[in-house]
Image 1 (spheres, rainbow, N blue to C red):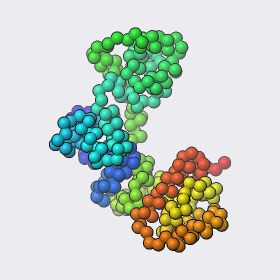
Image 2 (image 1 turned 90 degrees about the vertical axis):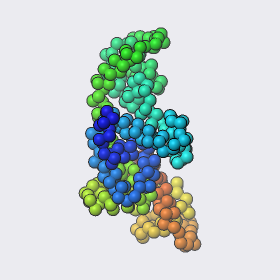
Image 3 (image 1 turned 60 degrees about the vertical axis):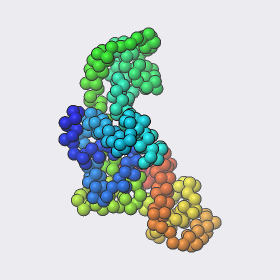
Length: 338
């Protein structure tokens, strides 16, 4: 995408593309720092996001990278300056993820656009290529990815490709550019399929699941004023603490193994009777007594602490749902019980 076309992209679309391109935890934190109106607008844009090309995504990340460097006039430029700045405003783990994303977007390594391709799909495209071409491409890919492609080739071609990689000399930039351009055109359909998955209601739901409850409610309430149907769809894709009532008794017993009594007592502080009973009836008499005692002597608690405890239990639920150990009624294929 040319600089002119990038400049013509709206700020909201750029924000949406950036948020779906980075780690969901970091995206959730960024959203929580915005004012209510901007959160609503950006969330709507993410939900409606479509037609994002690889060039547009990379251009947005590059622009963010440049703007990040300009935030500190003392910065000398380059990745070290960005790393220093981001480490001052983000947790080290989050800063590392952002830097890795930006480096991948701005790095000019030949065939860099292939690094996110499915090795199986890439193998299909390379099957009929000349061994020298395959060797050239694989020599620039990460070793695990190149190994996966090589092991899918016929044995004779495997030998040819490995021999050519081992004896490969310097390749002129012109030849690299020609091979890269030709391959990129042939793979355009593959990337188009991958990029169509960016954004959408599922992305919004996954981000909101990681925000605190007050941010989540603020976002959904704001969007609901404009598009109630969209909010209804988002809520169906989300899982909140109150949805634990949709888990069967066996699932509750599994969850309780990973939840401390103090944490559960805090989480149930503002829960309704039905949800409280759901937990109590799946506990031993001794565990019930301990929980009731904890709740009785706990005293007033900050709502943010209660919501944090609830969110930590939701994460336990999500872990066991992903592993298939529990069933949540009404969530996609999980409603099929055999």
